[in-house]
Each structure stands twice: as C-alpha cells, then as structure tokens.
Length: 550
Image (cartoon, rainbow, N blue to C red; front, top):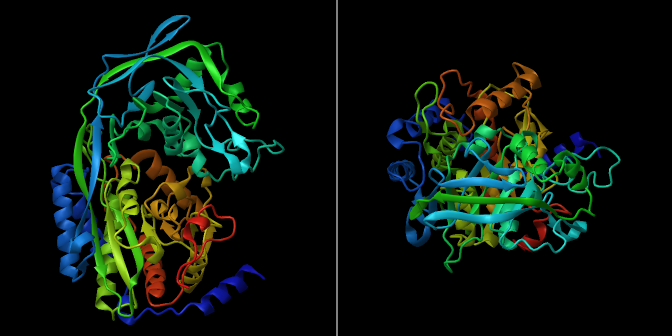
C-alpha cells in the first residue's frame, strides 16, 4: 500500500470532530503578547526557585483562570509541588589532573565543565583514578556491555557521547545496532551519568563532541555550574561528587597524558568486545565550594473536564522555566528568558486552551500542563510521572510543544520518533488536511525524542507526540529546506539557551501557527473520539503501556 493510500485510510478513520469554535486560526498577536510578557525582565529569566518563578506561576494561574478552566492539580489546586535540590559550584579551590608528566591544572568552563547533584558544602574528588568506559552502554537486548564487570567505586568514569554505532562506517559490525544516526536513550548524557552512579563512581566525565551531542561547548557551559535534581523521598543521593564534560581538545590531551590515543579508542569502543581502559598514572582531584539548597518549585495544571468520559485524559504540555540570570551578552542582556524555548510553547497551550474552552465540552478531559525544570533534566514532568494526578493508564496521549521554527510557513512538518507509536499516523493524517507532508527528523543523532517533557510519559507507556523544530530542516515555502536548515543553524549556534533567545520583531510566526493548529486539531479529535493511540511493534515503550481502553 502506498504512503498516499495509507494517509487516506488514516484520514477516513478519523472523526475530525473539531467544532467551528476550535477551528479558528490561532492568534499570532496572542502568541506574541504571551511571549513578550514572559520574557520581560520582570520575570528574571524564569529560573526555578526564584522570584521569577513566583511571578511566572502567578501569571500562568491568572491566565488559566481568565480562560475559565478548572484547577487541574492535586486536591483541586492549580499547582503541583516539585521539591528540588538546587546546587551551584563556585570557584575551585583545587581542580587538576596528576599525570606522569606532572600536575595539569584544569580551567573550569574552558577545559572542563562540572556540576553536582549532592548537598555537600564542597564537591570533593581526591586523587581518583580515571577509567575509560567507551560509550558506557549496558544493553542486554543488544548483547552489549561496555563495563565487563569493571569496578568503578571511587573512580572517574570517562565516556564518549552518543551510541556505539554513531560514527560507524558502512560494513562495521556495529553499524545499525543502535539505530545508526538515530540516537537511542543509551546515547543520552543523562543515561551515562545515571549508569556511572549506579556503579558507584565518584565522578563522571563525557568527552564533548558537538556532532554527537547536537550542540556546542557554549551550550554545555551555559548553566554556569548550576544544577537541579529531584529530592528523593528516601533521602539518598547520587555517588557522583561531580559530573560533567571535558572539551574535545582537553579530551585528546587527557588520553595522551596516559599514553593513549583517543582516536584509536573511539574505534575500539565501537566493538562489543571493548573492555574498559584505565588511564594509568592519571588521577583527578577537585575541591569546589558548593551552595546547595532544597527549593520547592511548581508545575501548573489546568483542566477542561470531559462531558462523557472525564476520567480519560488528553494532555498538552510545555515548560515554563528558562535559564534565569547569567553573564551579560554583547548587548548587555543578563536574563536567558527562553522566548522560543519555551515561552512560545506556553503561549501555544494558552491559545489552544482558550479555543477549546469556547467550544462545546469535549467527551474526554483535556489537561494543560506547564512544567517546571525541563531545562534541568525534565524534572517537573518526571515528578508528575512519579506521582501522577491522572493515572497513566487513563492518559490517552501526551502532546508536547517545545521550540517552534519562526522562519515562516512550511510545506511539511518534522516527525520526531519515527516508528514509535500511532501518533505519527495521526500527525500524517492531520498534516495532510493542512496540505502538508511529514518529514522524518534528519538530525536523529540529537536524540530529541529523549530531550523533552513528553519523554517522562513515554517511559510510562503513554503514546506521545512532540512538536519541535530542532530535529530537522523544515521545507519552507520561502527558502525551501536550505532556509529551514539555516534557521536551525542560526538558532542552535547562536541563541539556544542564551540571552539571544529573545522575542524578535523579525520572527515570522506563520510556521509556528501551522504547527500549533496541527497539535490542537489532533488533541481535540482524540478528546472527542474513542481511539486509544498505540505503540508500534518493536517500540521499547510498548511493554509499559499494557492494555487500555478495552
């Protein structure tokens, strides 16, 4: 069956139950007003645990109230509390390598970037030996174990970013074993730090590679030594005194100081036979003052109750947080307020919520979630997923918006997570209704399926759809795919997580409006149907879902 036939069949199966009140064009002016408000200096860059958060939470509650939605949080509240450990490393008292050639001081932010998720007053590593663990993957289903029983207690684990097959040449045995250029969760830096902690390492370092991680050293260092983690109910903490990255150049020097060639080790790490390699004669010592505090941040949840099956939930999500205050940029701006990432996503939620409220009540409930601490590791959505207000088994789907292209209308929409769930069929059907096609992400190595709040739901088996414009170049009506790629290159290279991510009067909002309307129509149709999206055969998340809606 051809792709066109498949799309036609999918279209026929959908109800398109979108009443006129919810089919009005999304207001560009409304989106812009919300973005300009949320990026005003009064919100101080919307960092969790700051006065900027207090103002943001109050603003969002006020907006949802004005739209006439109900509180959607626990116990009839607008908010869900999210306890976070907030840390910030200061100027190092000691930060150096000991090698056979002598001591090598490391410059924080230039040679190495570190943070901590412990509440120690001083992040301390005392002459800890370094062990290279390749990509640090333990994947029994792929018959792959990079650790081979290596004891990491008290040691520094050194990783490569991405998956073992990321740089594989055609014909190599590993080629395609982890999805090729499409990153798996094993390739994410979060997985590597988690794996190091599970094995008792005292520190974990990843060698930075811009292509492998999807962004430059400036993005790695942008948090400025600050970090956040969920407070564990049992009070336990990670074994990692520090975690972070070494620059590409410092990585080469680091291995050379132990008489090793990192280039050759990269090749060796692409084999299932790889065994950890000790960097003999090299140890890391660090003593860095830390300012830990436990703060309470907040998710904001609003609900539009269903008329027939209110216990079944369609969830829209975006994150309200950004990076707060940082060093002045060339224009003197100190607040990294995330206009596109993700004030525009919050603006989309508010516009969708307003339109749905003005329409006849949906059959299923619709919940709008404004998450905290996405930029700190999807922490707000993860806290919700650990303790959900609405059972995951009754959550029909999660639709997340996070960074939309602002370069104008596009002939297509980019799909993130091809082959995961039937939500991609929904996307194709509704995109066709707009006269658009679907293009699979052409930057799958960036692992965007694992980098936004929808992932907290995917891990629990809820089918998801992420609308994000960083995964591949849109085919712009004016500029084509080259223009779409130019927008991505400019945004990720210049503004991503920087003060530069600010409202710009040169934004062309028509493309963002297309995507928001597409997400709205998919969600509204699901809210008025009996359909339960499903995971496709082979998805690693299918087992977590089980049977629902039967």
